[in-house]
Every structure is written in C-alpha cells, then in structure tokens.
Image (cartoon, rainbow, N blue to C red; front, side, top):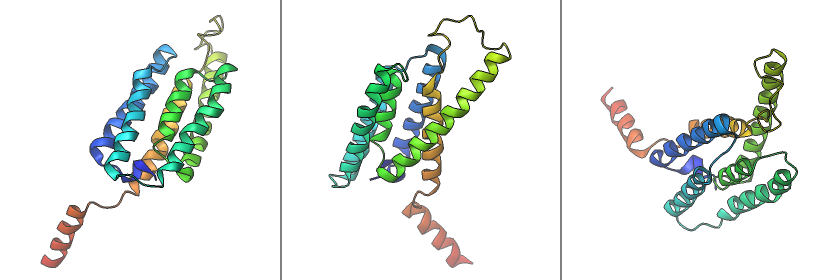
Length: 176
C-alpha cells in the first residue's frame, strides 16, 4: 500500500520535514543521524497502524528489506553512507512496488544531477580540490531527499479529496 498517498496530512507534513532535516544533516555533516532515519521508519509504522492490518503491507516490507539488502554491500564498498541506506530503506517502507520504482528512479536522477553540480563546482574552484577524500564526498542524502520529495509531491497531488471538502463543494453547487 502506498502510505504517502493514504496518510493524513498531520502525518505527511512531519515526514516531509524529517526528509528535509535529513538532507540538511547530510549537506552539513556528511552524516544522517539514526534518529532521523528512525523517525521516518516509525512514521511508516504509525501510518500502517492508522490503516489497520492489511495484506498489501507485504510489498512495503519487501521494498524496505530489498533496499537494505542492496544498500548494505553499497555501504561496504564505500559507494553510499550508512545513513543514506537507512534513510532510503525507511522511505521504502512507506511505498508499494510501483511507488518504490518511482522513488529509486527519482533518487538516481537527482544523484546524477548532484554529481554534475559537484563536478562543475570543483572545476570552477568553488569546491576545493585539496579536500580530503571524506570532505570531497557527495552528500547523497540530498539526492535521496530530492527524489523522495518529488515522488511524494506527485503522489500528494493525487490524494483523494477530503469527504468534508467534497460535501462543502456539493453544498456550494446546490446554492448556485
């Protein structure tokens, strides 16, 4: 089940704020805290609890586990940070297969754009070449956040209209 599409606003707004916090953390420190990743993960569990026990949650669990399974070797190889893998897996718990494919695609595109910008900044002398290997790494949490916010934003536009708002619109139409 796509939890982003079906969750109340009071749960999706904090999710968006936590995603922005993760991007900020990674941009400033090249690290995403466990607390930030845990907030995204727990938010998905709260969203699941609000919708009740459903069989379709198996897709969400598979997405989360698959990202961890693929991300762990990427972390071991030094391609991704541990916080990046945990954040992406926690975001995956919010999504079914179809939405997860969109998330991964958007993250890869955002990561490519971020890499191009960082290469351009290094060549322009904005990002100094004498930085150590750690200091010259790309904060991929920014790409993860950008991809997630893009996909979640697209999904939130498709959110079903609130029944109350629909009722008000019907009343207004009757008055005309």
